[in-house]
Length: 166
Figure (cartoon, rainbow, N blue to C red):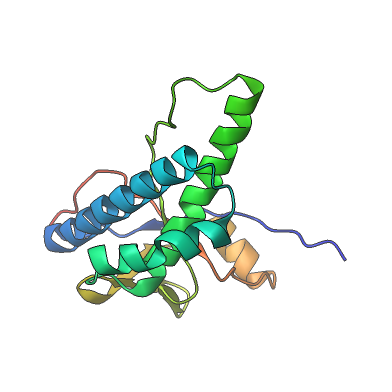
């Protein structure tokens, strides 16, 4: 049986400065985890998520004890995906440089790091505890939700750089 998935980007209501700073800090920690893991994976030719997690998970947990443990797990998934892609390109001679350049970061959230509150709010586990964010659903979002589509267990958060109004 074929499974069809759809990606819908949903914006949030403008975040207060204090809450936006929490996400900036979270993104910085996540970025440093992904960069370190990707460099390690490329230099040691690690392509598998499970192998990367087995080698580096405990080290990440000791470096970032304030973060929920599943951030280390999802960072390993993210880094393994990036490293595998880079190693494949390098093998074909299409990669530039010795290591991948990590420009864009979106924080991967698995089912332990986020939960939906109704249909218009999301709670996300951060280093300061659970944070609730209001969503601004649009027509396409409601079309999928009302059409019987089920939400995926994983989500991604990407900051757009504009600070909220308050």
